[in-house]
Figure 1 (cartoon, rainbow, N blue to C red):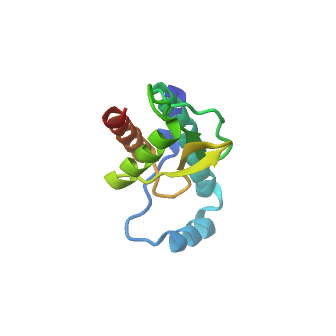
Figure 2 (tube, rainbow, N blue to C red):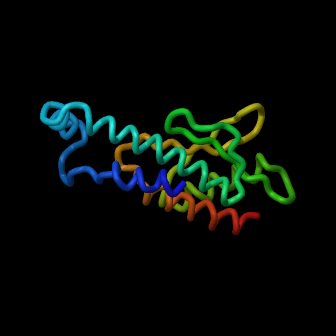
Length: 141
């Protein structure tokens, strides 16, 4: 994970303030080529790997290695139904308002889903999500 974080810090760049992303994309591609877009995609792939490693350290189950920028994970509570718990966790995270996550059913298991392809998603956003998950698991479990 430290190597992933180091690479993230090299490729992660905040977008130019006040320039719409579509217009910025056209300007950048005409001026600089596809390099900045490749760097942005690399950042998102690294963020997915980083998130999976860190969410597992918190105790979440994440069975599927991310191939692109989506990570699935779920909490297995000490008591009670895991599906119900993860639904409540999803609602708590979304209600918190600092970050947004979604969910899916995988083989009948209610599973949380983190997708990090948005151009405004950076390491600080992922760290915020990890904090929000940790806080809400502590409240609900």
